Image (cartoon, rainbow, N blue to C red; front, side, top):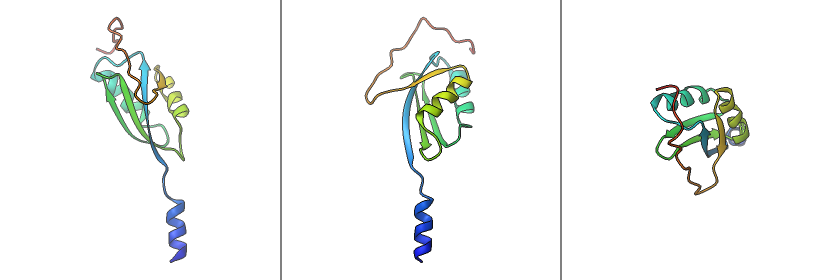
Length: 102
């Protein structure tokens, strides 16, 4: 019985959530899909939520397998510069930027 409890404790995941914004910004569903379809392959990523209105990407991940820095590297591979937002930080929408995927 003790061995089972130790085994279960060692298998527990350290699940965290991080909020990112990107450059270029997301402008359409195609932008969101490009991020979701590619970042989901980053090791340890559990869930991705994008929001065009707030220009944010919320990623839930296993901290034992990845980190915000590694996730940012994943964004670079798909031609997005990403940065992690501080708690409560808002992103100003860049209406002068145009989408190549529309």
